[in-house]
Image (cartoon, rainbow, N blue to C red):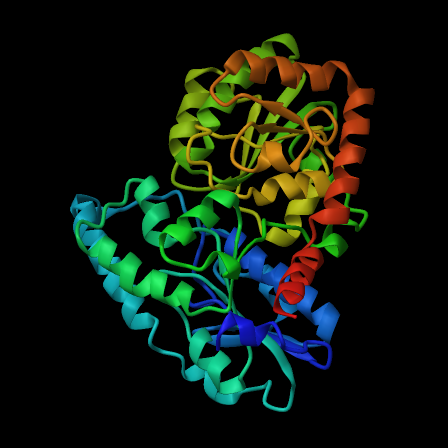
Length: 418
């Protein structure tokens, strides 16, 4: 189906949409933003059309169930690293084995046989982009509906940024698997302008591309969340809480945030840094905190279910988006929208699309990545001027609820398809 055909497609008489995540319901531990994305999109579709099904390789779920994915033991940690003999296997062979395993699993979609949508009029099939695509193309053809592919980042390109090298076969995967899948989609929605530029380089027609940044569920963040019990359990009842949520990865530059916090804490002894999440960098960061004698002031909560994140954010007095570098910052930080939706004063980096989307000193405060002095000073500004911080938080909340919801992103897609 070509895009010019899709433009004539009538979505008003539809009563459902299908969303495909091309792995199992237990995948992407430590990358929960992927599940939050499909939960947001599918809930918005359900509000619009009445039905939304989320398909993984092992199950078909209702939209409201996916907010609790991945379906793993919540006490499991993603920061344990490799154990035993695995840590001695070269990264090259681990990557080859992982790609082969992922390819084999991508072919098993027996779950589609049940077809709970068979008596419904489907608006579109939406599929999360992955190294190996799911059955989105086939299902869209069967139903004669458009395929929307959502891209956080092309996989080979992004993982290369993280240091994962696919010598030789990476270019082949990108060209003949990733790029082909994207080119055959009717709409390719991606999180940032930088990702859009990469997609064009991969041969995706610019007319198909829609920049669709991460967003929030207004119903989730408009609820009157209170973290009083969490604040009490963590001993933060009389403290200024500087908070961060996410996956502990090197590109977040949390070590830089901790170093800046040390000076803030020296000036404001009742300040605390609350880090909500888990990941491969957690142990090195805990060691750094210990070496800096900040163990009583920096709190690691471990991984938390997404449904509880609003409660944690509710106890933040200041919310931070951190980054190691502004160069190549192709992300659309989910945490940024969540902080704003909760009405928190936010400190974010001059990086990626952030300074083009949000107004400095009106929606949030921006700082220069790598400038510790500036980071420290702006954190202190928040602390020393609480009334102004509250106003900033109110402006940011209004902006994100007006323009940064999944319902808004769904509207952009339907408008492009109509």
